Each structure stands twice: as structure tokens, then as C-alpha cells.
Length: 349
Image (tube, rainbow, N blue to C red):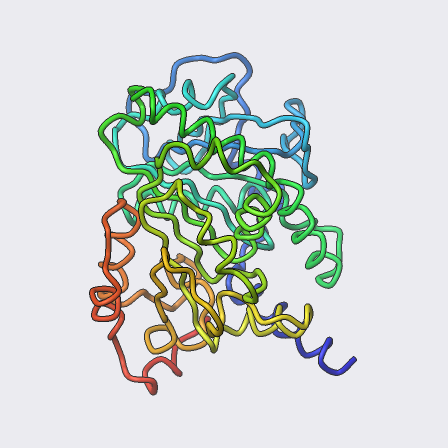
């Protein structure tokens, strides 16, 4: 019981320090408007995003998507931001949503971890878009319920990520087909998948349960990133080495990651995003973030509500990674030499 409470406290404190905004408040949702019809987007806009969501849609409600997964269908949304307000348009296909993006850039398919409702995922996608100058496709699944206690949400998020694996697989097949056909929205750009924390549960479950032959038939992912993966470390090489659809695979780990230590205690299993032991996947590059980020769990973006700022060396690393550029293990190691441990200890999560 003592270990369980300790792990729970570690998870609660890390989530609380990572976000201070009430993303489910009326004020937060009032920044969004679900557009009826399909009017053309504005010419001038701050930021545009594409969301692929398996939440239930409630178009007549202020909170137009809910906090549960719908495994029967995927919804495609184009989002545009103007003066702090978001307009949300539903599109019939991924291609139609992508074609509405105003600029052609390298693409990142981004899957987040525990604790994100729709509005929180929008903030994360917006930050990745603006900080790394990429077009973001957010895979948006229900990873928290604001009416549940943290202990219940931990299992809720894990189960929903597992349930979403088949839909994530189908989305990847759509992107693969577009890449093979050289469709206009993906032609001439690089494509990266970035899975953070529990978002990696979908990737692992997909590799263990889906038919991999069609996916591996044509390599279409430039960089596949398993960042701070909240999945069992044991035997990971068996499913990672089956990833023939990605040209480069990166596994980010940090033995002092406080959130993964909590997950380790709760599940009694060492997490892949912690210290790596045993056989490694020969097709993956393993990148150790411990000396660069200390006990942090989310270290790839700067947040407006957080004092911590990513060192320039890490910005350079993630800029290369998210734009699909290949990075050798030697280059990665050199880029992650940033600051002394005593400086890290003074930073917040």
C-alpha cells in the first residue's frame, strides 16, 4: 500500500506541475466554436492544426467532444486559430482536412499521454506547430475523465490507449496509401510519428495485435519516435524490430523520469522510457536524456505556464527529429550534452 500511495503521489504531482490550466472550464471551451457547415477557412490565421479523434461528437454542446472513446469511427477536424479563438471544422476524410492547411511543411503525427482532454491536446499541438514549424496531426483519444480520481484515471488512460490501437493502425494505413500515391498534401515533405508517454501504448498494442504485413509493405515514416514510453521495457525489442515501415526509430529514455517511476511502481514493471536493459532492437537508436533533463518527463516543448525552458541543444535535436531528419547516435549524444546536474536540480518539472 505504501508503494502504491507513493507512486500515485508522484503521478499526481507531476501531472499537476505540468498543467495548471482548467482545460474543462467554460472559459476554456468558450475559446472554441464547432462550425456548422463547411465554410472556407479564413485567409489570415495564427495557427492551423488537423485532429483525428475517436471521441464521441456532440456538435450542439459547448463541449462538442466528450471524454470517452468511440472505437466505431474516426473523426477528422481542421482547426484554425484567430486572435486567441479556435474554429473547428469537421472534414469527411484525412486528405480533405490536410488540404486545408495553409502552408506545406513536414508533418508530425503526435499522440499524447495521460491527462489530456480535447482542449489540452489542442494546446500541445499548437505549441509543437509553432515551436518546430511543422504541420501537426494530433491523434486525439480520451486519456482522462475530469470526474474520476487519479487512480481510476491511470487505468482509464491505459485502457483507452489500448482500445485505440486499431484505429491508430488504420490511420497509419491511410497515410501510407497517401504516401505511396504521392498525394499533394504529403508529396515532397517528411513524415514523423511522435508518441509520448502513454501514447506509446497504442503503438505497442498495434504491433502486438494488428496485421503488420500491409503496414510493412511500404516504408513511409521517416522518423518514428517512442518518447518517454509508458509501456513495459521487457521484451520490447521483439515488437520494435518488426517496425519495417519506418526508416529510423528513436527510443528516448531517462532513468530518473519521475512520472515513469510512478508508473513503474503502480504496474510493477520497468517502463521502456526508463533505463534500458536486456536486448536492444537492432533497428532503433536509443537516446539517453538523463544528463540533459534530470527528473523531467515532458522535455520536448516549452509551456507558457512552466518556468522550465528547453536548452538550445535540445531544441536543435528535436528540430531535426520532428522534421524527419536522420540523427546518428553519436550526433544525438553530442546534442544532449547541455548543463551540469546542479543547474538541472533548480528547474521545475
